[in-house]
Length: 249
Image 1 (cartoon, rainbow, N blue to C red):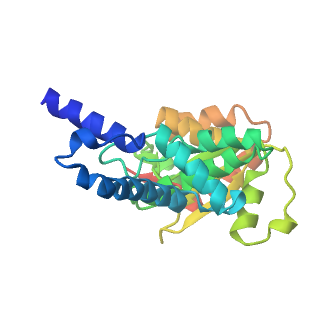
Image 2 (image 1 turned 135 degrees about the horizontal axis):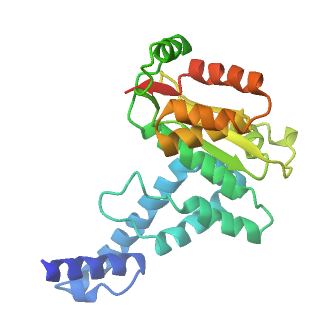
């Protein structure tokens, strides 16, 4: 078994390093076919990244993006069975490249796209509205209220949400890139459509608390304790409930 693992590791290393395949071949005549195989492997993974980060490709341009994808693939080989998780470090990778070319916000755009992809493949869970949550609180039965797995929150340094939406709607000329914090909530609705919304620090804190605590009473109490405008926070909580970001376990 250890010999097989060693062989497989060497084979994969030869693919990603585009190295010498002669030791794997019974005849050198097969070498040209392996060149095609290697190219197809890289092409498939590049298309994988293009599918997950289309707005990044739009911003960078097809040639630039493909070149960056090739470098990422070489440095981050795909492991067997990791099709969905492949690309998890791409936002950080492309962000570092963006810093070199004065497009620092590109890493945040990639984060939005990565969170969107993960929201779309999250297990489907029936949402609950505020009335059901209110009844659960009234009955003291709130331990079953959970944050849906498709919901994530992203804090950005730039107005990444505006930039993303502008490219999505082909309105780039109308968007100014500015260094201003945004909290972006990403989720899918009951029709599996991705949704985006900028939210206040309260919503960000609540969702982060839910992810950490897993218990809505504690999460809500902790989040409200950090907010001065309690009325506004409670109104936003009602809105979040009606958006369907919670579920009953």
